Image (cartoon, rainbow, N blue to C red; front, side, top):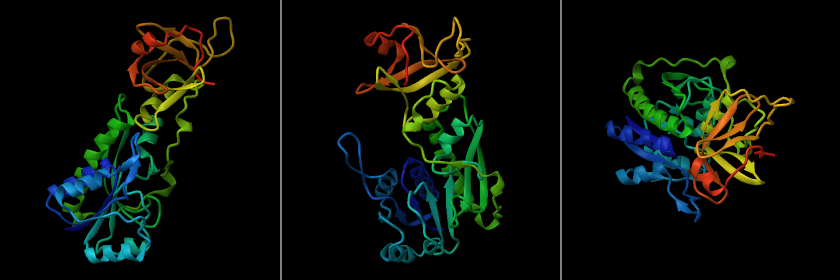
Length: 315
């Protein structure tokens, strides 16, 4: 098939490489304009741009697909189909109508669950044990189009958003190649809107741990916000990021009482563990990062910043 591909991050680059390796004719690759990145805030090419350049594929980086020039370039590509994966720009109806067989999206969830921008993180936060890839026909709605294929992927208890992203990227790459191979025989299935959930975009403030919550939920939050925006709390008024943590069931009651421990209270801080009381249970912090510092395990952190049991994390 003659394809226009639109995507930006590594998740999309995996699909682009798979389509090219499968022998598809990539008529044009669309990706977002270069953005400032890193500490130096220098302009950086997207993962999709890097993949396209490495393969010598035609490339365009329009700021918007609503502009006549951008649509004219797409029209000239004369594509059979357009494949979209985490592109980051809205496709107006005029663009959706250009390819002969429409536009397909590689979505990182089993629709209609987790429509929206952050399906990987929301699935982990919710405690889902399974997610997957949906290949869907695009329409004017937000991930509302008819589904062509669904590929389940288990969520492991150790999965972070980063590790699950990589698993889903590989699954998505395989799924889109298979879908295009079988495209004439695929039967679109409408989504059940009544079963839809929305995966809202992540914000830094929501990644701030609320120690009043159960330890199990906080442990999921640490995994879900890794690598971005990163779970965090306050220590002596300074941010402390938490990259790895494990929930425990030690009976440290948060309610008032003679032996009660307040949520956020450090219960143990030694060479073996850094343990914090939660609304229920405890959270053992395994890998942390102080403000202006590097990631380190809890023992290394405590060697340079000793803490006494009883100190409070958070507000």
